[in-house]
Length: 354
Length: 139
Ligand SMILES: [Zn+2]
Image 1 (tube, chains in turn red, blue):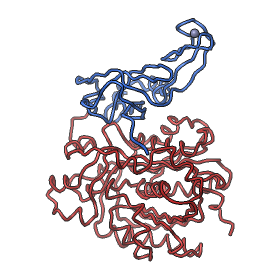
Image 2 (tube, rainbow over the protein chains, first blue to last red; image 1 turned 180 degrees about the horizontal axis):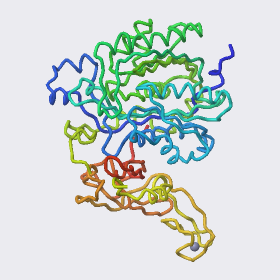
Image 3 (cartoon, chains in turn green, cyan; image 1 turned 90 degrees about the vertical axis):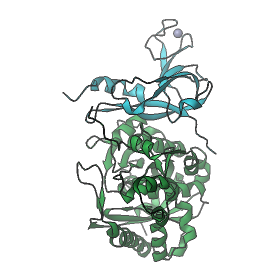
Image 4 (cartoon, rainbow over the protein chains, first blue to last red; image 1 turned 135 degrees about the vertical axis):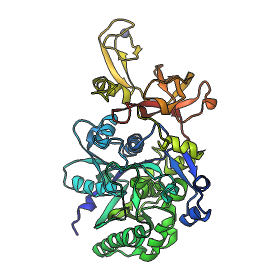
């Protein structure tokens, strides 16, 4: 099998989670939800970006951590691809700001991609092609979001802020190598935000079966068929994490044990970081996995689509792990705020235009 | 132009110094010049080299600004401090973030982070710049 994935891997990985936390009990208190609502979602608290943070600043810190672990010169990065649905500018790339701040400009590609929560995952597949073909030596892929939720919407229990980044490069020096990948996309309107709308809308029941579950199952089954791998061949499985129950349910559908999902399942502590959701789960697995272990990664984006990846951890991961803060370091850095501060930090309080 | 209160060219020209901390080392007398200058301000030599200031800094002194300039409203109170990089001795005036005023003390170890500095209303440019936060614990 001569697949492009085999010559490509993750050279460095890094994440960022803002320090502020909103307890889900605050959303219950302010909006009068039944107390069991967050419990049914498996949620405890979510990460909130501070007033001076956005998807650019968070993506920058995640990328800096990935570069620290990759130990490659910014000059050798030939592409910076940012997946986000919360760009500070509707028009003007976040990628060029981050690339400039990291010293990667000007000899680089740089673009923002949008596909709800899976744009950064598609960037990962594109980067495999770009590195395998020799078009670039290294690509920097960033998933970053300050996810929006209308105040009082059930999304407010989960929509949070965070970023993860990966330096994708040649397999021979990688901390984890790609084995295969597969993408499954259809036109399914389960969640969207119209141009100019402040908040997204979603079709409550529709977000599950025909969207999240059927697309992830479609992508993972496609991957298994292509590779002749079985669910039992994987040591870890990381899925998109819109709440803490969906990933466990999709794992059960695929015949994957709960124990393989839990190490990468961090949504109950940080919330759904959208483009960074599954990727931060992968980042945590790279923080803890042993060389030789095989990881199934399956992000999902509304609209809708899913990508499935088989990734094998190498001994380089052990070497690179300590060169940047881990996901757990960021989860431990935590300050609880009340709903009023959350509303201020996320610009949910009406003020006159300046 | 009616929406633009900030000078875009000024921000664009200074972006290198906003995103990264640079200083100049004089090859003649060995002293460090910050902010960078093409001529050493200690000995007048033009034989200089640029370098990036990296690593941790410590807090020397600080103050809180309650009457904020336009575009800084949501960051109020704005904490501004003088921070020193022990290795090169450079002192920088910068915003301190992710911290309460009550937690600040002399010698607090800080690390640089890229943050939003201000916004030109809802339609104008966003200015990003380095700020400093207490060094995070890392295993
Ligand atoms: Zn001199």
